[in-house]
Length: 482
Image (cartoon, rainbow, N blue to C red; front, side, top):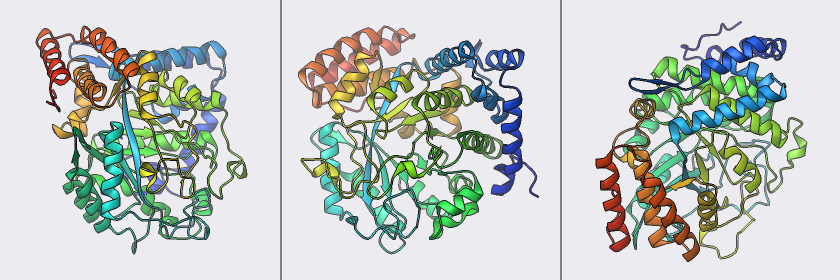
């Protein structure tokens, strides 16, 4: 039997089945242990220090106790704490991105994804470089600066050379005032050598969802194809780190397996990265199983209510205070709005989950990976965020200034968000308002920027940001950054 060891490089040891079962038992036994719950909430609370703000976070076992707790007033306290932590480290900024689907050719047999190899009626598409260029121009014309590229696993149709060529094409396109400044990559688990190639191509975050941490369920859900190899998939982030990629993004597909198991496994994976590499995940995503071409989410009996989903988000935020959290357009506007207050720091906007979807006037459905619940335009999403008091941010400065991995976490922990990320967010929002926004959004945004500039603590930074924003409003000068 494998022994739990967060410093091990073997999947069965850092995601240990017996440890997860014991964690779930412990959480159930202590879910009404008010002295313990109070002590955990106090441990997780942000503390001001001489160097900024510090948060201890929680272990997978401690956080599982909070998740199991069903005492209404304690749950409300968790929600307030999650919001406090989010504001302490990320402020009221919400980073915006869009997925770009390059190809839906796939050799795997994943039973929850319409791209599975046995699906013979879905339209298979792979973008040429000219089509990539057209998609990127369409995305730039919406106002996007940050993309997450997606492709099925197919060594013939989607080899690493194709992915690298697409990244080069994306970065090369400068249309009007538009530019994609950060390309995150969500492709199948691969080798250290290929991760090194992705790093050299200038990617931002490497994203790979585990889908499920339960090995037995994983093997059943991935019956055929290279993704069937649980260990190779689960150990991918270690190979990515070895290849020089220090920003990695985790996630599970909630609904495939019991949520308590996935929650504990997800946090154990974060602890493992911290223990081995000195830095945890840059982001954690929280997708839920959704309807797609030939996929019925009701076929999976682990679906989550919206209320439970919100509780999971809050508990993740409390457990890993410095990690970015992402919610996509899989979720409705209502769900996303609640999630923003519980720790989410990144959202997609104006997303299309089909290959070649951005150049189509009408949203195509024939090659979507999943149904999009929030179908609003990017402009509508930007306006909505501002109406909620959030700052829509198109910032990519940390990535391009080399503040990745532990260097970004140091910035976050030292409380420099208001002097660095806050003005960067305002300047990129100003770019969006001038170049792409509707008149109403522009009016709302300019008023918000004026208010938010006053929150920048350092006078020199505040006045320089104000000058840069004035330059953006009055000229074609772009891409200022701290």
